[in-house]
Length: 133
Image (cartoon, rainbow, N blue to C red; front, side):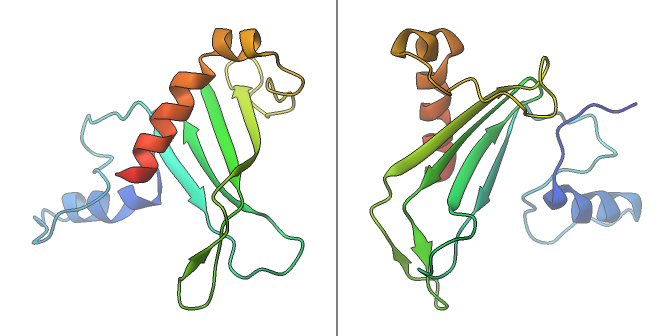
């Protein structure tokens, strides 16, 4: 069994590695045939358009044992132009070791002390750094 954190960006590097091809351009992902192991992954979704309803723009820091997600007041139009305040509208934190199906948002009714104990300030800073990179 392989418990590494992987994403769709790892597919092309894996196929190229299996075929013995060295890519001419840098790849965002890593070959799954290597021993490389990332400690977390940035996952994002951008809402297109300003119509009501639907999934809002969000980004998430995903590690093996935790997931922290922020939902934002941000949208894009058909040309990719961003609008909105960028304000965080909602947050979620899941202990993936104890709650792999993400049934209990640990930030629901959490106090500032609870958030500190969960490491939320550090996770929020790491997520912001990943998004800026």
